[in-house]
Image 1 (cartoon, rainbow, N blue to C red):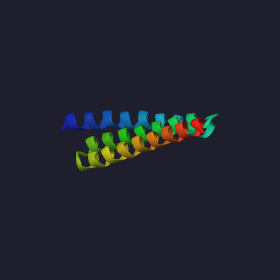
Image 2: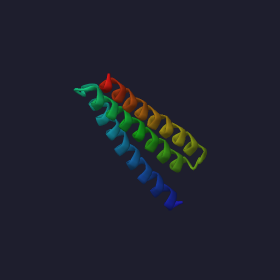
Image 3: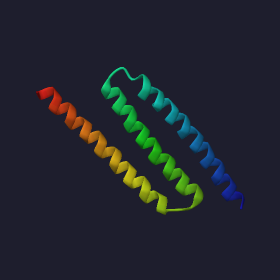
Image 4: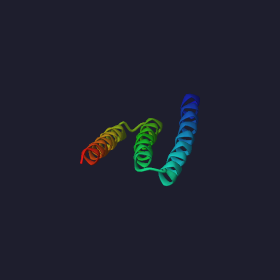
Length: 93
């Protein structure tokens, strides 16, 4: 029982750190001087959201939530690739 309380303590600390990182990334998303800066911040927000979901799945002992994290990571990756293709097409024209 003591081990579980330490696990939730470390999980709570991890969630607090991830939420503060999410706040900083959101500030960069709002303040970003250029479009690529904002897209990188959005990609970082997606990665942090995946990490928050994974930590929550570990804390609550629900491994089905890891499937949601994998899907969200794939969607974030596809968004980043789509933006890179958009920049590539915009530069060549």
